[in-house]
Length: 268
Image (cartoon, rainbow, N blue to C red; front, side, top):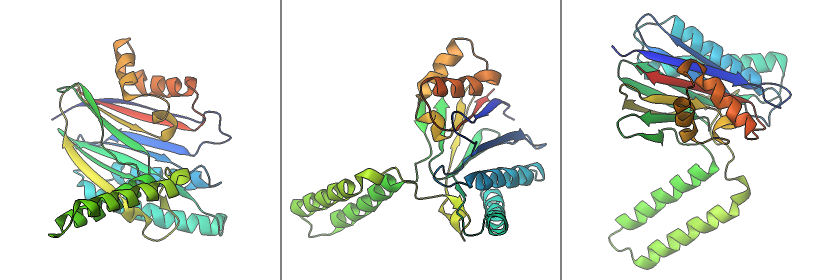
């Protein structure tokens, strides 16, 4: 059975309050679960959503052994959504509260990941010596790209399509991007106080091996450092136990103006 070491760090940064939250632990089955939630900064009470999501996920994980990831995620996410709705209705009626979710369950040599929103999950493969972003940001840019990719595929599958049809489709895509250029990074998926918001989740799974790394991060960190910086920190002597703290502090030193959270896991 694979073993893991890890570290986590969450910093308020220069913001007035901290809407980020995170959790990581190992259960009696030897599974490791990690989650980062980033409350949407444009909403005054988004720490409610992020803290509830973390609390429900942690409780579900601690009380469950030999977890099957998909059902586990839907169970805690649905419960979290219900509690967010109830809490906001009682304490802040009529106000929104939403959060991103990025999480990973490590079970032996397999990583199961899920995300809602634009918090990110990265994988470093020791075999290839390369970082790969596993999650796909759920924002307007992704939505538009996916929409026009589907349209283009439909055009290409038409037996009578012409090069002009393809060109016109690509030009329409470019106009769509131009029309929304000021809002392309607007989040399109969140866990919030509305029904079925958790169903916007996307999931992946992949194999991990000795000395691989998993990095889960809020945008207050990944917008201000490159994954390669993590390797530089390790080479400079930073231990895994101190790595997440060092990564967050580097992002803040580079000018991050947001709450900043990272979890880093190493396969031993």
